[in-house]
Amino acid sequence: MVDEVGSEKQPRRNSLHQRNMLLSMRLNSVPGRESFGATSKNVGGAQSGTIRKPWRVTLSRGNNSARLNTKIPSPVKQKNAQVVGGKPVVDMAEYRQGSKIPSPTRMKGNKYHSPVKAESIKTSNIQKSIAPYQSLSLDDFDIGKKLGKGKFGKVYCVRHRRTGFICALKAMNKKEIVQYNVQKQFRREVEIQSSLKHPNLTRLYGYFHDDKRVYLLMEYLVNGELYKHLRANGPFNDILSSHYVYQTADALDYMHERHILHRDIKPENILLGFQNTIKLTDFGWSVTNTEGVKRKTLCGTLDYLSPELIKSKEYDEKIDVWALGVLAYELLVGTPPFEENSKELTKKRITRRDLVFPAHVSIDARDLISRLLEYEPTSRISLKDVKSHPWIVKNCPYW
Ligand SMILES: Nc1ncnc2c1ncn2[C@@H]1O[C@H](COP(=O)(O)OP(=O)(O)OP(=O)(O)O)[C@@H](O)[C@H]1O
Image (cartoon, rainbow, N blue to C red; front, side, top):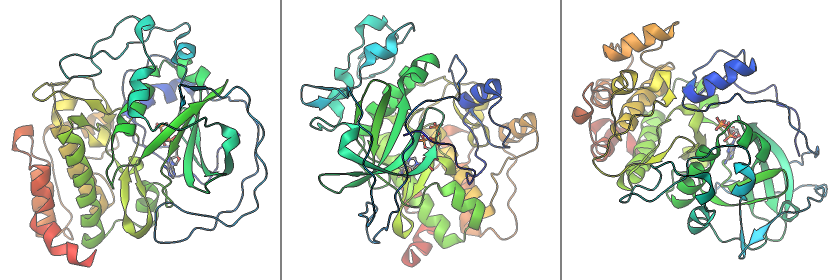
């Protein structure tokens, strides 16, 4: 089911962790924002698999999920998809071969802090939080259009044959997950995303695996990345921008109430459904953070990093609030507020909080963005107050 990368893809900004991988792969000459993080090996590009012809999808409006009218070629049989205890299970033992994996351990309510021996990793951590699908395998789905390609897998629109349910299926190569030592990131993404249920967060319905790949079943967002729309049609007016900012604030508020930080907010990680509904996605850098505990891992995307991240200080959920300020600015202006040609200059402007608004940005929008982009994390506006800020209140009747 693997085919070539579409050339229609927009230039994208990678998170810091992806930058090093991409550089060493010499894979990506696309200008873009890059992400940081602690992935120790480089990512290879070559993948093997069976090519499937895409079918055409006719979507009906009104819901972010969709049904289709289409001719569907029958999928190639995949052997050895596994189900344990009535639930599809990722065989983490296969990922562990030949690699050291920090395992999640429960520590005073903080699930994922302490690295322990690889042998103690249990798939039950994942099973607890994920939807209990019965005996799912690739045979249960008709595979449709390729929606996009990430660093570790490709995403397809699929239809569950028995129910007709349409969703997005992310196929990730097991070998690559191990090879590039991203087991921890993958596990975290699955655990966190499957535990979150909010209208502005992309749902992870479940997962299953076969010999070669792990498959994540996600809510299908018909209009793809917000970044693509921003590049094609942006910047947006106050009405649309405020709608997106409100939804992002509401989703982040929900996550923070559960002590989960997203840590990589940017338009590339926001998907667009019908009627301007947006959904945050890409929880690969999300983390559960016990109340009052600060974190130090450097991750995110340079343009969206807060001063405390740039300065490698400890941080908390207020980094997402800062990123929301950058997002609001980029939606209204078309570029992020501290963007420069060189990374060093961008970092300088962030640490100086060198914030300049073009003339067309309204007073209310400036006020909210300035409050989100307060230098001191504790001075930043709360997400609840974002939702009742005058810029939001004035624009929401037109959403
Ligand atoms: N649920 C979805 N609905 C619709 N399109 C999606 C969905 N999930 C992903 N896509 C599309 O597939 C592309 C690849 O997604 P994927 O999550 O694999 O990688 P990514 O987030 O772009 O990068 P990374 O591998 O760094 O996480 C996205 O850019 C998006 O265009």
